[in-house]
Amino acid sequence: MAAIASRVVGAQRSRNGILIGTAVMAAVLAVAPFAGIYPVFVMKALCFALFACAFNLLLGFGGLLSFGHAMFLGTAGYVSAYAAKAWGLTPELAIIAGTAASALLGVAVGALAIRRQGIYFAMITLAIAQMMYFFYVQAPFTHGEDGIQSVPRGRLFGLLDLSQPLAMYYTVLVVFIAAFVLVYRIIHSPFGQVLKAIRENEPRAVSLGYDADRYKLLAFVLSATLAGLAGAVKAIVFQLASLTDVHWTMSGEVVLMTLLGGMGTIFGPVVGAFIIVALESYLAGFGEWVTVITGAIFVVCVLAFRRGIVGELRRAGDVDRRRQLPRRSAAGPVSIAKRRRAAAHCGRVQRGQAHRVIHLLDGNGRARGTCAL
Image (cartoon, rainbow, N blue to C red; front, side, top):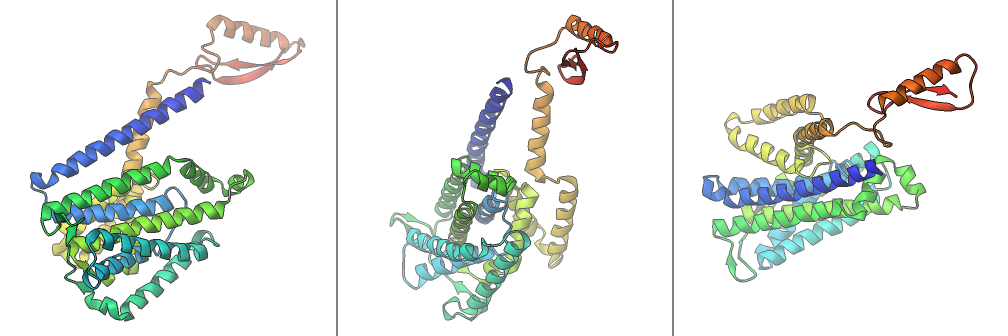
């Protein structure tokens, strides 16, 4: 009972820490434009952070590695950009249209890919992503390598002029915080707990009556929808939808962001996305060497931080908390007199007075051996 109570208290502290961290993150991002930070840089990082959080929901908590997640980012970008420019939809409707398109694509791809596991699942997603890439290269409405340019930002709900940088910035911030809280809620819901169980031991989860394929398909669709939301917002922010967002390198980049920040953590993808975007921005003067430098940094981080930056920080905090906890057994501390009497009795047992078995404990209440009585 004491161990269960300790775990409950630890989980409650962890949730409180995440909520406080989310509030601090939102406050810092809210004042970032007034601290001399370029708003466009932060908006780009927030879009990729949302993309990484969507991917982490699938990989970190579902155990499904997708090498084609860029197709959801790019599809939503193309649909939202075309809807805003050609159909004249307002930005909120264009974003909804792009997100819905990615959700429908996620249902179709997930229903096909979820039939396989491991590397076969990853290869199926990569193959379909490449098919989508060549489709967008040839499709007339995408304008090929030129992309859809000069996408109007319009007025949000007919009131907020998104052509103003601060208005666009805080719109992106609100969308990101809302999606981030949604991901947190999904992870800590009963659905999220079952998803973690399937990730850890799928046969056991199936033996308990859970339909693993159905849960994995739902996780895939949710991840595709959130990735589409990131792509739709990104197209409105930069007024552009191009082949870059649907290329296979973008799928590799989101894997890099997730692993660098910390797979299976809440804040890890956000940290990884900001680091990668910052590297690409501040090392742009090196040209094509940016990819080499980013790869070298990734190798170093993988070797030094195997759980990712946030994962290693969380592990260090858990170790410190364990050291501060008193070491006691479930039955309480064992007195020195009781241990001496047990040891003396064990000595008599060796001379043939054996009736039953007792466990000898050390000073911390841990078993050191057994002796028959």
